[in-house]
Length: 281
Image (cartoon, rainbow, N blue to C red; front, side, top):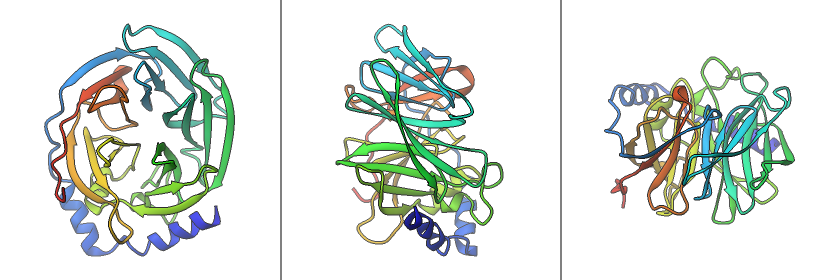
């Protein structure tokens, strides 16, 4: 994790200037785009942090519990409940073959530590834990794409934030199969301004080759792309959604269907998202 920590220090030089702060403030004033159509709503008691889908089942995620629901009927199939002392803050999960791979941290405690928690999708039995220890933020996202793991280390202003860092130090990290960091990118300044004072709570690669990310509170999804050069992701388009941030996941069977949660209503919601025209496409 020393490499990751040094990345966090070096990225801090990118942020914090007056021009960057002014741009973020301006971006934060814009209203959210109209919400995409809602295709389905399901009640799920565990829907407090995020949702993941394998196309047949939905996995509703809370800090220390996961509920498995059949999409066709809405019935609850099974639930896993963990010890809150060991699982203080799971945030998002993704389905990778027969495993549900989840991002977890000690949020809101500091110093920030993180782990990857892995479950059997059939039974929801907890299989193993991979400790990442101290890092450049709190692990909020794990996604699988192009043979790599993709993680987000979030930073916050205020609660859960570590002294010397804030939301501007949030980063996307590409990892190998052993969850070792290979490369990292900063988020666009205008996206960070929309997420402030919180951070990135959800991210899922789309089949169109774009990265879709959400913050903590706004009903928005940010379509991002890796840059051809440099260290900052590029914003293609901001899409509206009916739910306020939190962790998301694309449905692997229904094109352009994105799963999210209605945190206050204990709901898992499927939205049919429009295609991205984008700035550079």
